[in-house]
Length: 354
Image 1 (tube, rainbow, N blue to C red):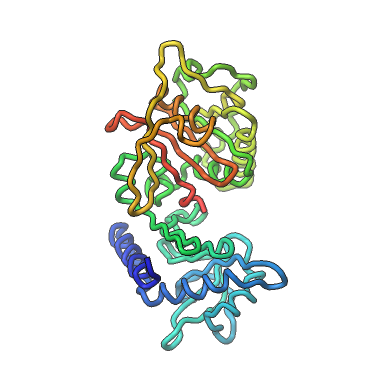
Image 2: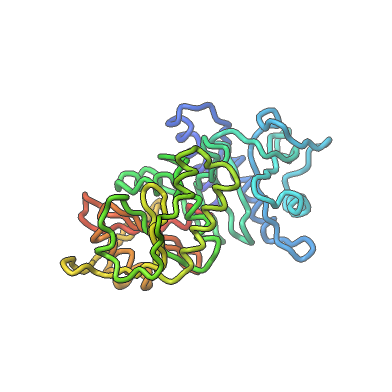
């Protein structure tokens, strides 16, 4: 897909999403999207003092940015300027503001405040760009729209994925559902530690132990810090983040962390196995929430490793549960049971977590 075609698709996505959400949003046209992509892409390939830039560009006027830092004279939206500014705005949550200036675009300053559905383009690393928008929750993760990696373009497909009756967590990653979902920060933290890991989320009254061979690290009583914070509405303080990182850290231990749907840790290092009466999982339907992707039914043994096969087996038996598997190479898979297909579905969602 060429840049012009992509830009039209992105502009249409933002227009449609704003219409569906029923909000007044600042929607860029296709020409604006193309200019921002071009400037960011070529900036991503440059270096300043031996370092590649990490930049977030937000398309909005200064009047929509709340308290912001404004430069006296707007700066050109070009790779050289972006590369020079990158060290000042590389920390998370800071965006360079981009807006119209005559027939072109310019950088007017920087801000931490942007409205919902604001067009944002983030430079992750050389050649890797993500187009996203802010959710209604100002502190939540942005919803990804497009991932551009070199000449590869992945356009997120919310409608097709939602139509598959995906788990609520996948819907949250797409920008729908519960933005307060505890699993989103947990998934980001699991992916960030880069050790790989598995997390099983089970109903608090389920018989999950039937599908576990051994529990070398049972937690008694259950570790309820995270659950207590959620019940008290403390999802936005530092204690909540510390609890999230502590639980995500446990997933690096060989085996799986077992977490109840009340967000209490029940065990870690749990070894998944088939119960005496349970059948082996045979096939899994693998999906990627990307436009043009065709779901592939494959033998569970070909999913990619012990963690993935074990997670599929667990969901095959514990059909009210959810399994999250992070790989060391950055891949991230969500396993859930599909009553419609009567199969385990494996959603490859790493493109939504960038």
